[in-house]
Every structure is written in structure tokens, then in C-alpha cells.
Length: 168
Image 1 (cartoon, rainbow, N blue to C red):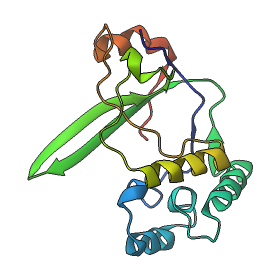
Image 2 (cartoon, rainbow, N blue to C red):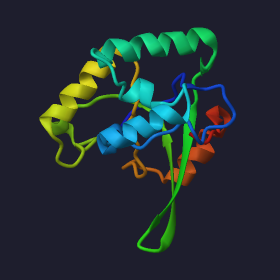
Image 3 (cartoon, one colour):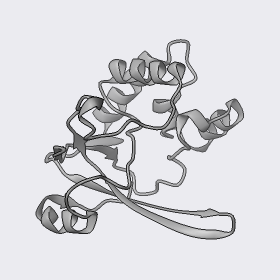
């Protein structure tokens, strides 16, 4: 069975998040990047896709500065983080529910966790460089369906004591 554990997350201490969040990094054009920079000096773009000569070290330095100044805070205890996303597609509104957790890496041959759909070498290398520089997964893979022996709702009920509900 897949090992799923809570973790100590890093999140904004600021209450108003509207001007701080971005699209996933690989969906952001140069124009969007400039617009995000204008929205707020603490916009996530400065961590996830910084406009710098050395974006990896720039992100690392910004992350440290924001943690030291309290813009970002690291939770003291490990939690599972609820994820709720509402979006419109072809005129219809959808809401997805999921959670973020630490998952033990397993060899693909074990077929416990299946690989993501087709991915490209360049973006994978880029995100690995960012992960190594910041020692932080700035854009964790969200998953909405886990192949567990119990349902998601039952899993949340079982882990209710450890679950800290948050909107990311």
C-alpha cells in the first residue's frame, strides 16, 4: 500500500491571496509574468518563475527572505492540506476536492503510483533545478484521485484528527 503522510507546509501569512497566486509556471507567458510582477511585491511569480539572471538562486534567496520576514510561515506541526478548486469549463462550473500530502516514492514497476501523463525533459529538468536550489517543492503535483484501498472520504474521516483544513 502507498505510504501517505502529513507534512509541515509553507504558506502565506497574508490574508488577501487574490494578487499573490499564479497559474502553473508552465502556463505563464512573458506578458503574464510581467503582469504578475505588477500585482504585488509578494506575488508567487517571484518564487516560481523569477525574472532573474539566475532564477534558481533568486528563488532560494526570496524564499528565505519571505520566511525570515514572516510573509511566508512554516507550520509547526505536520498536516494534510485540503485543496478545493472551482473552475468553469465550456460554460459549466466544476469543483475538485483533494489534498496535499507526502507520498513515499516507489519504483514504477511496483505500480503503486503511476507516472504523470507525458512530460517533457526540459520542464522536468527546470523544476528539479528549482527543487534543489530552494529545497522546497514550490509547485507540488496535485492529485485528486488516489488508488487506495479506501475511498477519499473515508480516508479524510480516518485522518480527521490530523487534518488541518486550508484553502490553498
